[in-house]
Image 1 (tube, rainbow, N blue to C red):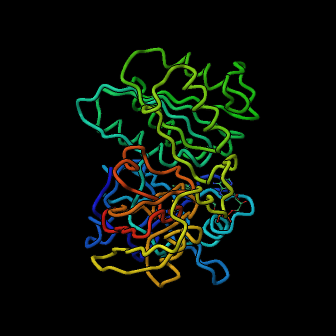
Image 2: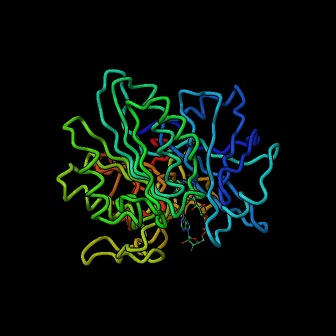
Image 3: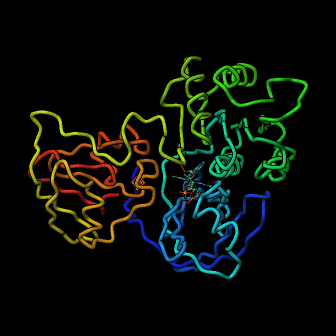
Length: 366
Ligand SMILES: Cc1cc2nc3c(=O)[nH]c(=O)nc-3n(C[C@H](O)[C@H](O)[C@H](O)COP(=O)(O)OP(=O)(O)OC[C@H]3O[C@@H](n4cnc5c(N)ncnc54)[C@H](O)[C@@H]3O)c2cc1C
Ligand code: FES
């Protein structure tokens, strides 16, 4: 699914800030009326923030936890990662009234909602992975009166459960449509299914016990990489169609075969010279010369002084998405674009290298 809107940063004021757990905060932003349309979002999408640490600009993405049905609210939750530069700075230093440069919303972690849908949304969240899932839960409860949701939510211990009371409140209010099951690494539940890490076996047992119906089911997974791998494997073994499994990665997979900082070697026989790459942005054309075995298009464009959009530079966030309208290219990695988007010519420019002498890449077709 693609929108015509180009990703842009605007300066927003922190309107509220509340400590959710010892190591996480929820940040609310005021959206001025003139920017409401730019910050309209879909449940499951994220914002990218510029965070300045010791004078260095870091770009980090944070999923929106509020619902698009609450237009006055735009909130994100940030969990401090041990040794993490941006998350530590945000959790320790941000105050209400401060301003932050925030990119307009992006992301594909959603399905199209419809009031007539009768679906079962089964969500697996781990730690801060609850953030986009909370937005999905809140929105589905209001937008699809005949759909229901089941959440399996993994955390180390009860004190670290982000949005614990909000989930409890939603569960009480929608007891017939929302099931919430906490799985705690160091838990002491009598039923061992709710203690320990979410392994393949546990994900499979949870699904078999709580998702027995044949309704139209969509699966959403967001959390630490090992949990996501385990849940996906369990679902695939249970015969779930891959198209029904929606995954949001917060970091590039460590298990990737591709070395993150090295581009894929050019295949024998493929174009291996210096390509003329035309980059279209804001309706203007810029001509760059990029070696097939050199920098990715995004880095070459940044080096040339173009203000092209990016955040993770690791193939997970899709902020750098653009469309190839001429020529051949190859991506090193892709964890963000759907198969349909790739078939439509979309690429992650942070991973893209030319594979023909002439290439045209259009950032305006986002
Ligand atoms: C689409 C998207 C949505 C995201 N949504 C959220 C969100 O809603 N809430 C949230 O708190 N974070 C979210 N993240 C993660 C966030 O963008 C940062 O990666 C995270 O805050 C760590 O950044 P840092 O600068 O503190 O750590 P860095 O200084 O970049 O990293 C320090 C060390 O921590 C490891 N690390 C980095 N990120 C993580 C992580 N998430 N978990 C465990 N280890 C990590 C790195 O491998 C590194 O060794 C999201 C990421 C993406 C791509
Ligand atoms: S910048 Fe995140 S996928 Fe390219």
